[in-house]
Image (cartoon, rainbow, N blue to C red; front, side):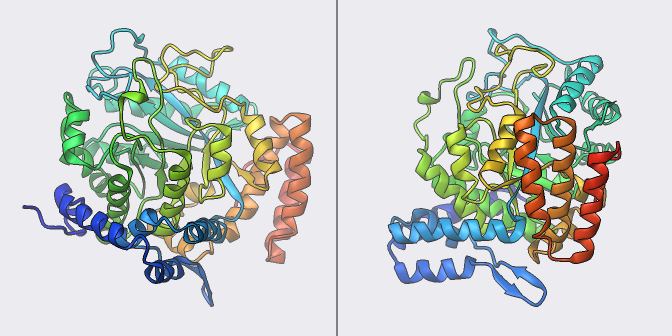
Length: 482
């Protein structure tokens, strides 16, 4: 029997079934233990120190107690502290990105994904480099600066050379004032050698969803194809970091397995990365299973309601305070708005989940990986964020200034990253407003920028940011950054 060891490189030891079951039993036994819950909440609360804001985070056992808690007043405190932590580490900024689907060719048999090999109804498509270029121009014309590229697993149609060529094409497109400044990559688990190639290509974050940490369920949900190998998939982040990738992104697909099990496994994975590499996940995504071409979410009996979903998100923020939490357009405007106050710090906007979807005037549905619930334009999402007190940020400065991996984490964990991120957010928002925004969005945005400039604490930084914003508005100069 495998023994739990967060420092092990073996999947069944750092994501240990026995440890998770013991954790869930402990959480269930203590879900009404008000004294213990108060102690855990107090540990999670951010504290000001001489070096900045610090936050202890929580162990998987502590966080699981909070997730199991059913005391209304304590649940309310979970939400309040999640928002405190998010504001302490990330301020009122929300990073904006878009997914770009390159190919839906896939050799896996994942039963929850319409790209699975046996689906003969969905049209198979793979973008040429000219089509990639057109997609990038369409995204730049919307105002995007940051992409997450997606592709099915198919060593013939989607080899690593194709992915690398696409990355090169994306970075090479300079259209009007548009540039894609950061390309994150969400592709199948691969080798250390291939991760080195991705690193050399200049990617930002390598993202790989675990889907489920429950091994028996994982094997049943992935009956055929290379993704069937649970250990190889679960150990991918270690190989990515061995290959030099500083920033990795975790995530499970909530609805496949019991959510408390998934939550414990997710936090244990974050603890493992910290224990082995000294750097936890740069991002954690919280997707829920959604309807797609031949996929009916009602066929899966582990779905979670909106209240549970919000609680999971808040508990992730308490457990892993430094991570960027991502909510996609899988969710409705209402749900996304709620989760922004539970710790979310990144959202997609104007997303299309079909291969080649952006260059088309009408949103295509025949190659979508999942239904998009929030179908608003990027301009509408940007204005909505600002009207609710959030600064939409198109910033990619940390990645391009070398503030990645342990360097980013040290700045983030001390709260000092705000000294760069707040003015960078305002400058990139100004770029968006000048180059792409509707008159209504411009009006809201420039008013917000004026107010937020006054909140930059350091006079020198404030003066530089003001001058840069003035230059963006009155000249063709772009890409200022701290």
